[in-house]
Image (cartoon, rainbow, N blue to C red; front, side):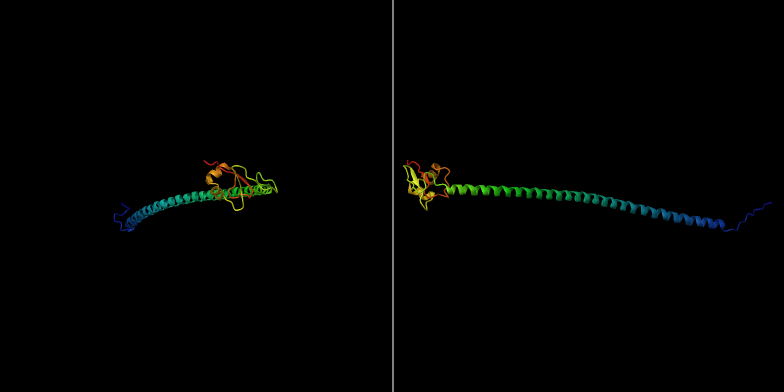
Length: 171
């Protein structure tokens, strides 16, 4: 007849149910933990993206800084070259001015022959030692501006003794 007994006192099925329930609880806990890990990972991914943005901004700023440093160096070099060229030109002009002054000092004043005293003609004045434009104008009853207007090209700060000056006509 029946070889299988209807009464099974084995704990094996009950153990299987208990182990299955424990496995289900552990699986649920693992799913919850995994969800927390995924949230933390997403937050960290946002932070990493921000760090990457900052790193790219730093690289861009560094490149701009390097370019500015190169531009400054170029500007310094071109400025130095311009200053050097300006110095050379100024030295050349200084030499030319010295030659002009030497040539002017070696020639006699206008209308004065060497060794002969200058004689003033009508409407003329011969410069004496200590004369200035203001003294000459005052002595001849005219203004300094009238005196300078009839004597263009005269260096009033370097009047030479014996130099002839024109006097403005009296009104």
